[in-house]
Amino acid sequence: EVQLLDSGGGLVQPGGSLRLSCVASGFIFSSYGMSWVRQAPGKGLERVSGISDSGGNTYYADSVKGRFTISRDNSKNTLYLQMNSLRAEDTAVYYCARKDYNYYYFDYWGQGTLVTVSS
Amino acid sequence: EIVLTQSPATLSVSPGERATLSCRASQSVSSNLAWYQQKPGQAPRLLIYGASTRATDIPARFSGSGSGTEFTLTISSLQSEDFAVYHCQQYNKWPPLFGQGTKLEIK
Image (cartoon, rainbow over all chains, first blue to last red):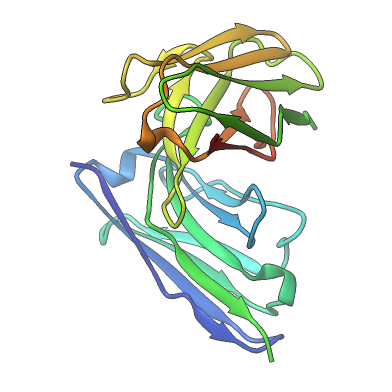
């Protein structure tokens, strides 16, 4: 059974940092691209970052470019999102999601972790 | 970038009735469209990909249709567990963006 377990969210002040983690199980982690998708309160879904299966290619939405860094450790089946210079508008539930093997839709999702940026 | 517009924003339907949700793309996405269901407090779940292929373990009452710029998600006979928010997402062109969602509520 495919499982994605997100963690690392919390309350942080503007300008602060957090690192999110997503531990994967039930599939060959190193064979799949992964993404972080967020959802601000009452809003739609926004893909903020993605990484290829090997980690060699990464993507960032303009809203987080230069502040967020995605990475993965295939030996630990874990995906990360380092978030720096956090802003109030980064407040959201963050989901890790597995990209389909061939196409860019998301076939499995973590349960989400809440990030709140507030003073 | 391709913009997806979902309509209506909110749809009120009685249990047992049919629900029809729409997703319109600002340019053709061929059949590269997915639908997700999201219940309150839960993560999205993949329902449909390739515009019309049901994902694993998705009941047959869910069906997707369309190609190009016009897509429809139909739920043939609404069950209580189907009341949720539904998101469409295109993956034909970079970046793979989502629509704003349709909330399906009990009438």
